[in-house]
Amino acid sequence: MAIFDAGIVLSICGCGVTFSLLNDENMRADALVSSILGLSRASVQRNIRNENLSVNGKIVTKCSFSKFAKGDTIEFEAEAPEQVSAEPENIPLDIVFENDDFLIVNKPAGLLVHPGNGHPKGTLLNGLVSYLNLQDKSKDDPNFRAGLVHRIDKDTTGLLVVAKNEKTLTELQEKFSRHDIVREYTCIVWGKLKEPKGTIETFHGRDPNNRLRFSSDVKNGRKAVTHYEVTEEFKYASLLKITLETGRTHQIRMHMNCLGHPILNDELYGGLRKSPDALLNKLLAASGRQMLHAGTLGFTLSGKDFLFKSPLPEDMETVKKHLENISFNLGE
Image (cartoon, rainbow, N blue to C red; front, side, top):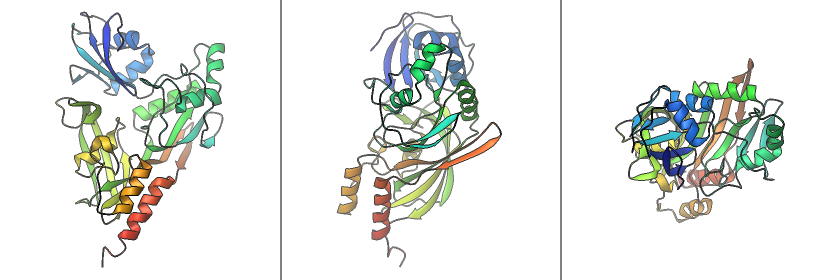
């Protein structure tokens, strides 16, 4: 727990920070959050407009908001974290594509995207700072900005775009803010869905009973929209294609749990179950992570269209094939 002049940090989870004010404050929301967390004013403003700031559970979308009182609980989540402060480390990177403006990296399971509470090193960002020599570039130019544009969970695999200069970073951040990005995921969920395709639209906020989770059952929250389509049905599970309209933290995992069909092996959202099939249980235990993969990423940059795809990682492909094998006679 850390204490600042204006507030005390209650918790840090990924890019989410919760803190309580020690005194009444008349500062603008963007200035207050920027001063406490050390983020750029522009970054804070963008995230406030994207409904990433709440005061006592109520979403604040105006950067000029200034009605802060002693004891207020403030939650802020940065969709695109500040970059260059991470220490460089020689971490192997699976680079799918690279040009002068950006690179696409395929993140493996178990690798944190960026440093967080208790994890200062060993992250994807540490590896990128080394690979792109970001630390030296920021020393040569204090205003230099580059790096990660978005993130996925530690135990989710798949594609991420990394900007190599400020122009590309700004352009891609704006596209993510406008949801002008193609993002498709593949997941394996428990059970058979009632509808072959559909849309889930709910509130999204911290679960008051478990600060590591997010919940749709909140009085005030940000809008979260997920589109899903069943692509295969198995004996105990279903394979889904997921398209994100918004990109909230744990959004797919939360929404699959809302449907009553949590993602296989997702302990945090009810997906850690035992099936009647011993080999399936063994395969899931060996994987040790949720069956969720960010397989498609597309965007337009400087007038050119880009689309990248990543096949299922080995653990998900193995589980999928086993489910196909035991479901062979399901329709007969």
